[in-house]
Length: 111
Image (tube, rainbow, N blue to C red; front, side):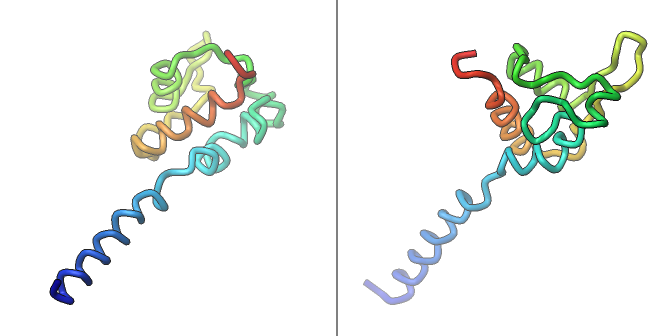
């Protein structure tokens, strides 16, 4: 085999593995965007979470689609006041998918 072909093959192999390393960390996205209100444990016991009456994510029964909609569009209370900001413009599709997994991870096993 020609050395160039072997070298190119090695480079492509290494680059293909980098996508796994670059995968979005849902926990990190959550910590950077959601934890101020929902807390690192998802219980919403933070000062901001209490003020805005954020939901305890351990008790959430929302579907993936409902969680995604709230992340993308935000959430208003009954009076129409925005109580959760929209992150649809700030977060990539991959980041939103990853944070959905993290949010659902606060639920007790089997829920």
